[in-house]
Image (cartoon, one colour):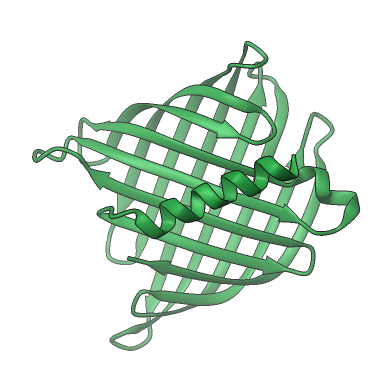
Length: 214
């Protein structure tokens, strides 16, 4: 497991360094027990901007012995077809260091104005190793309040729920961030609530985060 995490972590960092997307966001969260690294990039791949390649990579690393088995790394490229300004549909291949490969298809809804962004992504997936289906919902919001010309307050949230065979809880999280943004850099406090397996074993992490967009 440790070797898989190291290899995939290096792959994600390599993507972060070399990606030249239309939009790329990198976040590092650190608490006493946990380090989280997230990368998200989005790039139009045709002139009409109807095809969009979105790449997600993440690293979740627990340092305490009791939670170390929850450490995971994943990477997921998704090819979205933008059939309206707000709605997209597309397939993806996802690899997770715990569950292996899966094939997925997702619908994405995005609402955005000057201060608020909301994204909803329901997904149907199929585990290759276990030959089982699962359902997933992901939601994200970002809200900003300008303070000065280049300074603003930001509140961010990400929420995930995964159900194996559509009924059994497999994984969920709630990630809340609140901080100050200066130009393309953000710094603030964060809260991670994580739940694993049918019994929803949980961990909680409070720490600091740094995010940059380029």
